[in-house]
Amino acid sequence: MISPKLRNMLKIISENLTQNNIPFALIGAMSLILYGLSRYTSGIDLLTEGHYRPQLIQSMEKLGYTCYQKSDSFAQFESETETFGYIDFMFVNTEDGKNILRRCIVAGNDLFGDSPVIQPTDHIILKLMAIANNPKRSPRHEADISAILRLYKKGLIPACFETLDTDRIYQFADKFGQRQRFKKHLNTVFEKSGKSGFIL
Image 1 (cartoon, rainbow, N blue to C red):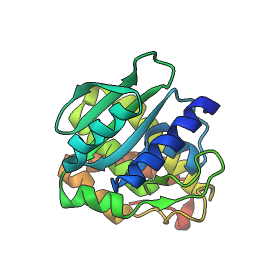
Image 2 (cartoon, rainbow, N blue to C red):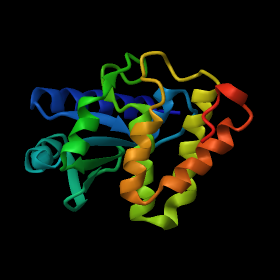
Image 3 (cartoon, rainbow, N blue to C red):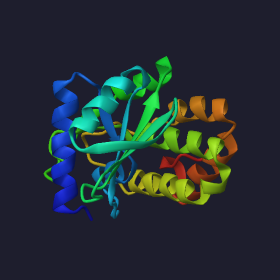
C-alpha cells in the first residue's frame, strides 16, 4: 500500500531529479510493488550515482527535506514536519553500479507514474550485496529474493521487465561471496519445475 501523499512526493522528487539531470531509479518496496508483490511502505528508496550527492542534497533541501544521515554509499532524508515521508538514496560509484541504472526502465505504472525502476535481476543483486554488507538483516533480504523468484516461476513478472538473468546474478554473487545462498533460493523455488526449472 502506498499513501496518496507518498505518491505525490515521488512525483515531485522524480520531476525535480529529472529537471536537474540526475539519473535515478526506484529500488526497495516500490520496485517490489512494480514487480507484482504486495508491499506497504512509508518511504521512498532511490538509486543514483554518487558524484551527484552534493547536487542531490541541495535539491532535496529545496523541497523541504533535511539530510540526517549520509555516507559514500547512501543519504537519508526526512522533512521537518515528518509529513512527507522518509526518502533514502543509495549511491553507486562503480561502473557495475552505474550499469544497473542504465538498465532501468519506466514501467508505466499508474501508481508511480514515469519513475524508472531497476530490473528484478538487479534487485536481487542489490539484495545479495546488502546481505554481504550486513548479514544480520539477511532474513528480510532473502525473503524478497525468494518472492521475486516465485513471481518468475509463476510467470507473474510484468512483460516490460527482462527475463531472469541467473548468469548475471551469479557473476555478482561470486563477488559478494553469496553464490551458495542464491543457489539455495533458486533451487528451492524451482525444484518442482522439472526440466523447465532452473535446477543447478
